[in-house]
Amino acid sequence: MPLTIPREELMLQGHTACAGCGATLSMRYVLKGAGEKSAVAIPACCWAVIPGEFPYTALKVPLIYTTFASAGASISGLREGLDAQGKEDYTVLAFAGDGGTADIGLQGLSAAMERGHNVLYVMYDNEAYMNTGIQRSGSTPYGAWTTTTPVGSKRDYKRENKKVVADLMIAQNVPYVATATIGFPEDLERKVAIAKSIKGPKFIQILSPCPPGWYYNSADTVKISKLAVETKVFPLYEYRDGKLKVYKPAKTLPVSEYLSLQGRFAHLREDEVEEVQKAVDERWESLLKKEQS
Amino acid sequence: MPIVPVTYLSSSTRVMSSWRTSRPVIDYSKCTRCSICWKFCPDVAIDLITDVSLGAPNDRFKALEAPSIDYDHCKGCGICATECPFDAIEMVREEI
Ligand SMILES: Cc1ncc(C[n+]2csc(CCOP(=O)(O)OP(=O)(O)O)c2C)c(N)n1
Ligand code: SF4
Ligand code: SF4
Ligand SMILES: [Mg+2]
Picture 1: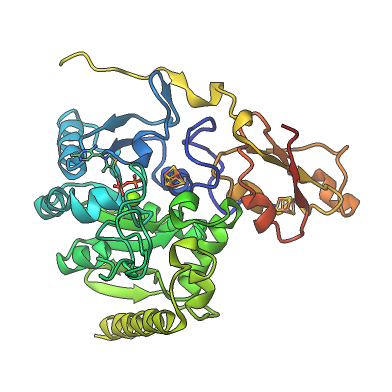
Picture 2: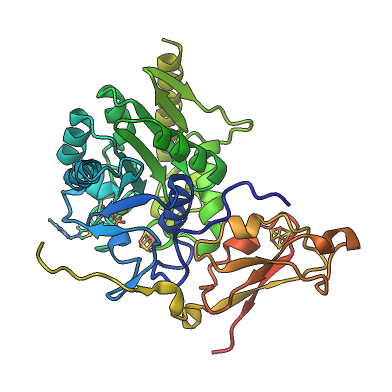
């Protein structure tokens, strides 16, 4: 059969991610879209560990590890350095977690986008600080269990809504902003290829399911990613030239189909699931309104 | 420039099979060579090979590239078995 994504692998086998890691699929597809003339900066996160300890690497492209808050600054410097050497054909990208993007790296990201460097910032969103043991981040969704929102007898699950960094980037009028997820590799790869073709700052947020952090069977990673889109919990959209385009799934499902597969939502009562449904519906409507305006 | 550690060994040189508790086994008589399992493998542990001696639903499929599990790198996550639209992959428990 003809392959639907490029054949060449720039992420190699033998990496040390957990079995069924969605963040690993994110990297695999991103590099397929970006191509071998890429340079990647990775701050502290699972992906700082996944390539393997010294002297191993799992990437066929140059990779630099940065401090937790510095992905935005690092890609700015990498870009300017490469341009100074005449290597303008290289794609410079950050590959950072949600903690490193929505929380500690936010100002560095925002500043890099504002300065207008020709870079692609990829946020792989596993919705918590996984590398250090599943602590809540600004990108953790409402209702989730994490080790710092441990539920318990006080029902202390995450009470705050997800901070959607892609929306912040749209508010900042970044030339190309997209959301994607690993259940739709062709779509993801296409978005990276578009980002690569645009000269200027770009941002892509990729929902990347995490079996130990979300508490589900590792075989369900792709299934859960698809369900996130079909239940509209994680809408796919693109923002380009000031226009928003929202992907409308052919079939849609209630949020319970997505939540019930994951142990991190197992404590939610029916009325609480209803609340989640209501919030998801409201966000969807507001996205559609923004698309029309 | 200060001296910084530079990696030089490809991760593919190491064997990850001890991480696995169950292994995917392909029933080629059901496999239509759609390559969906290849596409969704997070460990890049499914190769595409041409081997006419493998089984197939019918002879027409035999010339197409077929998936072949790289058991040195498969961690046994089971995504391929979940995603195969033809139920051609079974997860079989490893003897420990
Ligand atoms: C300044 C600083 N604070 C804390 C840490 C410890 N630390 C390393 S990775 C990590 C979690 C990263 O979370 P996220 O960015 O979401 O990536 P993930 O691990 O989930 O892939 C933390 C807190 C650090 N390396 N540097
Ligand atoms: S903790 Fe989650 S994101 Fe990190 S390597 Fe494991 S599966 Fe991947
Ligand atoms: S997904 Fe199933 S049918 Fe398709 S190539 Fe893999 S084993 Fe064969
Ligand atoms: Mg994270």
